[in-house]
Length: 439
Image (cartoon, rainbow, N blue to C red; front, side, top):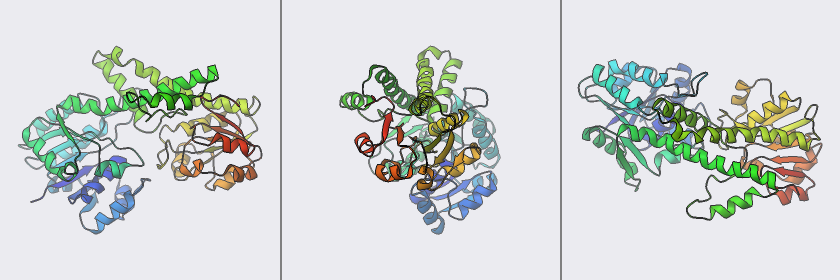
């Protein structure tokens, strides 16, 4: 009989994983404690924006391979393998990760597990969490039930592709049986040539936070170089292009600008630093504190540049911020650099209006006092300064002549180095960008 799967938690990770596992041919039940979210998913709609996911979800619900519930008893009775995909946000008032949803999900699942069930953690957790969960399952779970760890490496905006065609699969296991079960689950993926790496719990837990820490460091490195370029009158885009041709370095994640945000990189590097401190290895990752600070400075630098462009004062000036989501092709506004800039400029007295193709509804929940405009032309009309904060394609492709006909003054700050400076200057705009000289 084919394996049957459950997915606990239906956020960005869980909803995608559930739909994609069904796409691979498995019978899958997704669980969430939020009845409204479950009803939405049952209707074939995703409660967030992720390109392509709606279609995969609806197709597999219609095919009868995918359903959703709020009942732990139902998933425990149904599934052989349970993927835990709940959130691990930054703890309130602390740097560490809040793992209460992970432990709470396992506790709720334990009374309903069948003998021999495999619980698979996918959430990003502090190293050592898997050991604690494995001990709990061994103490209170049914005979033969055990834990494995299988970190996720999804990029928002590419989550479906990253699930169905990942660049690698990592599993942390303590038994041959657990390894064999996960090899069976992922057989359709590994058949494409995707490598599957088997390791211990601690290493598997560290893979995700180490990868995110490296990416964050690379982004902050080029943004630190942008600070030097601003002081020296050099061009960070040309600098990045030159060093990126070195095969030891590579060009990916060397795009200088407003920096990283979202629900992963910022909280993951902070939680990693906190956990390393608990383990007595704080000095080894002390550099991540500066990585975080460099990233945050890009936001205040953008506000300072806006003030300079507008003659030293933001108060009373109309400013249009293009972008609310932390990255393009997502409606996720968690720790959005663009929104932080908008809020700071409003606090300094500017009349701020924010546009985003997908993220306005979520942004308004977090910052209800900001001005929002769903129509791009209306957002640009009468503005004295345009700030590109999120590099959506429709902003990169925006005709500077058309924008000039709408704006009240032709000032643009390209905080993502995503626009064509020559084209915007040719249309009469005063063009400024992070890490690039004034011309």
